[in-house]
Length: 457
View 1 (cartoon, rainbow, N blue to C red):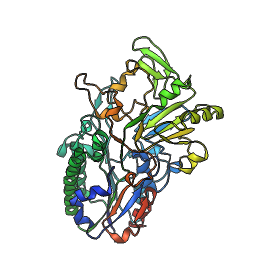
View 2: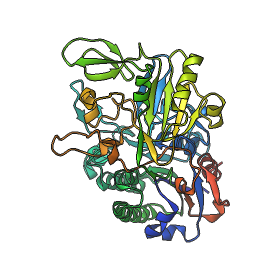
View 3: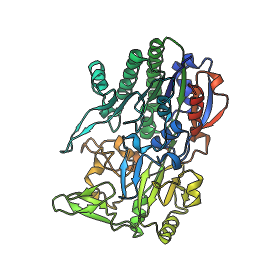
View 4: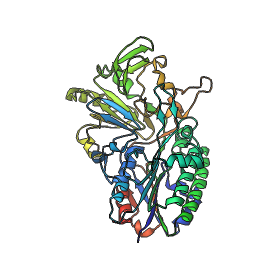
């Protein structure tokens, strides 16, 4: 008999939060829960790839929220295309099953052109003049037009940045529920990014997080009610917390340290004078402020929450040693990984840095390379997740006086990404059928196998 499976991926979900989510009670009455340990680096794209492939980054290639291309020495942040994932994911395997179960995936990272029958994920249209048009990638192609007729555009402005709120999550839940009623696919994956924001803005145990959990409970109640009405046979629910956050009170600036050590070079533009530069994200003719000049630099750090990949273009062993020594023992640095240490974490992949830094739980790493805020590039003060060569949590704040993103890193209150050693860095994995979750502790790579064993294989 075909089973119906719904897999919810909810970042920053902790065991202690479950008491504030009574909506889960009715699907967990006969269920089980386990402690979930995410693999380093504990951030969105790698953890989602771990959960859905059962493999580590050395196999699937997702070494962070950015993709480094060694040949061109360019970094692409938040790539949409599924070709970035170098191994089959849950929905790819389900697609090829001889019984032809159908899968729908709603808002996973890197889902464009994946093999699921039905897909919906944000993919705004970027115009040459720099403007952006709201849009979603869907399969079937006209699905987004159908969703717009019922629910309007996906509110991307409420998904990330200073205007992020529950509105975007409501759209995800309502459209997924509507589609379940239309097609009832046997496997449904839904990523609810909303719980990711409040801890970073206000701290992990702030009143704002409690308020967010109340909104999440309402979302889950709606989702569960509508999905149960959409299916004629029972649903097995799986819920993964992805990663947990820790409060932070310290910021490390790896690129500034590399610059001060003479390893990172920058070039400054005035926005008028043509000045070709091969930078880390694109080739510029005219630009404002300082940018890393990769043609002249010996090292560059791609910073992402609580870790950084440091790329050394010529892989020179003396430079690698010098870079590692530069960060050893510094405040906010838990580990400096080189060689075998990188392999130990399953990060030995061509996209990984020659040196990898891991933060202490109370610290995070900012991509900034300028030494004076007056020299910051123009994109630093706006929401520009694809242009910035690194993750920038400052985008969640806004300076109302200037209507721009502040460069004040002290406003960031929580982060994630460091290896999950303490209980506070671990999250939860839930299953509505206790027989399908017979253990009390799982790693993120185990989730793939537990779900596959519960499907049609």
